[in-house]
Image (cartoon, rainbow, N blue to C red):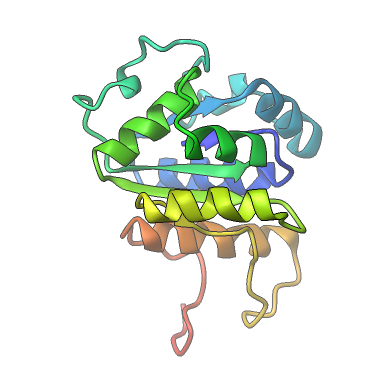
Length: 181
């Protein structure tokens, strides 16, 4: 999974912890700004994430996940900045994050991008359209409120639950419509 410099690091951190709790091998790549924003918003550094996932340097294009021969179930970039989204949409693969995303697209694996930006301009929308046409799922960080959240972690869990659903990973992060947890 990727973490970029967009606000919303709580979504990425919550997903990493959920995947760890579910026993799912997870690899994390953070951009330089992604690391800074996570530290600022969550008080979490990459060292703390090593407890939950394998951490890769964004400059290491020799990492296993840069190759299509390394089997993965998919990739999530959460939160995804418009800078990273634009680079991926336009085939720029000069970092491990953008190269790994390119690999996921060419191998036709699950690819979920969670942009955290508002409002979108026309360039953002066209880049998202280009990625959606290439097989990516664009899932804006827009939590629902029908579960009547009262705490911020409930909003983060809602988005992470939707991501896990798209990856077909069974979980119990929230009460589904019409059922009691």
